[in-house]
Image (cartoon, rainbow, N blue to C red; front, side, top):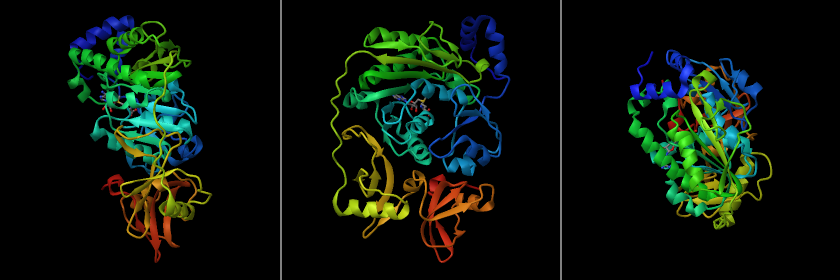
Length: 442
Ligand SMILES: C[S@@+](CC[C@H](N)C(=O)[O-])C[C@H]1O[C@@H](n2cnc3c(N)ncnc32)[C@H](O)[C@@H]1O
């Protein structure tokens, strides 16, 4: 049994009453673990075939499963191919409550490492705009990489504190998610270091910060739009307390019942849903609001599309690599890279944007060189090397090694028909282009 702070235990005893012994018992058992299917890459049948362990359905999302695997999810070929995201199942409940739709504009304001952003991307089916923001630069790298791995074509990633980002995007979004930084009481089983970091003062400081983030997030929701607030902690102050303060300061929002039965009703009766370990999750709180007050959108339109010879060259190369008509795609250049842009982009300047859309090509002196992102977001590729998912070749590829390969030119490397990366074939060998930072070591 792990040792937990006295103040935490006595508060939970009051909070849970007769259920407290059951709650305490959970700390003698391992944390829940799971995976979430990435519908941009495959269906549930193919995912099951591609994994060396069983999946058990969870109540939090139809794409979220319990799974146990000692080998490490991150080393599996299906993980590298973006077929799933490793996620504790109850963490998927916030996006279930957000209910994103294809074609909408959606903001995930506290997004790293991207568990929820990649889930939103799946629900959007590549249509509309997903804006994923993370103010802490060291955490934003994982967000960029996860969105690329999962094949999100329509995401902007920014690194800005809400005070900088939100005023420039006032009234722009149909749905906004605030998965707020919190005291992390629902992480105690999974990440024991969060126990050392916990304190009653920390809980109060988190509640203050959550309200400040929600104040900014409120600016960005259009009239009739949805705002979802979530935490992975149990304290009343950071959950129902924050929600009550928010609603009293923002009469332009009303609380909306979450039409899903996961977990239990919150402690204030109708402001949100709570999930305790007794209900199959490590710990979450989710509340949903609707903006009923007017909000005028002043964001300008994005105007920096790539035109002329370089745009035509990029389009030709896209058609060479991936079958199908590529005319009419929105392309842009930033530095020495060419990007495929999402629809519905606003003016980006001053908003801390790290990447808008998909990194397709690097501009070299006399040619364009394809980048990993171009392959990760495309289905069928013209040249393909299909490798058995449980064979030694894919493991060699993921370590960065060369492979035998017929044919020539840029070639997608696939497992079970899903692209994992690419290489350049010539003389019977495939030169490995799997990015160094993503390779399996050892
Ligand atoms: C609970 S985590 C988000 C997890 C993420 N949504 C996911 O599903 O992978 C909260 C995030 O908020 C970020 N954060 C910290 N301070 C913030 C602030 N003032 N405004 C917005 N985000 C903040 C943290 O760096 C952290 O990455």
